[in-house]
Image (cartoon, rainbow, N blue to C red; front, side):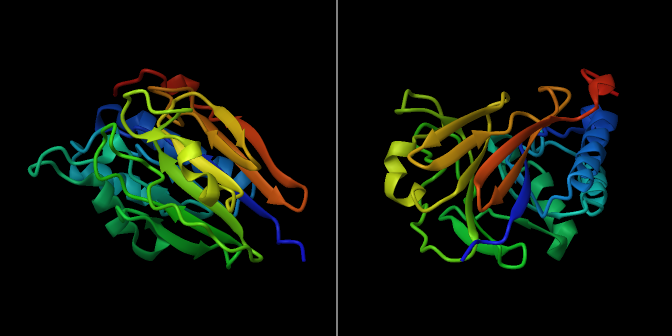
Length: 246
């Protein structure tokens, strides 16, 4: 029996910051417009939503207001820029998803968590980042999932590489060969350029940075249907906000 089709918008590295308030809000609005125009079923944000944890509460609340208007459900994981490096830091990532409540989902469990979304068509696995060090494996705990009528997708934040090379948060597919074989797609964040890798039947991809400040406003539309997994790159029309710090 063919699995029902599913369309995702995969984005990462938005690096939202109060220091570029207008550009950050424009990024979210145009991303929401892109999701609506492409009629996506689900939005995946693969980490680094914020540029740092040092964001005022009113900025996190403004971000929550924009994300509440997204035309599709948002699921996200934190990235290294979302981490708290001091007990005195505010927690804009936590505040954001507390404000959104049931309208969005943050996967922050350090042991990893698998959830069913999109009316059962999507099984999504994600893991919170405990620390950004060479010892942190973003796919640690990735389960081998049994086949059913859902699409199986993982989301992670780190550097994709063939073998560890000393960089923090290495994503080494060979470490997780058996589990990855049960997934259709792995949505990555951290690398600001778009990149994809076919690993023994599983498509692994970086969407690139959706930020017009530190990146090119990139995102990826992911179509999963009976013909397989197809990626369509996109770019947000926010060039006028590049390097704007107002």
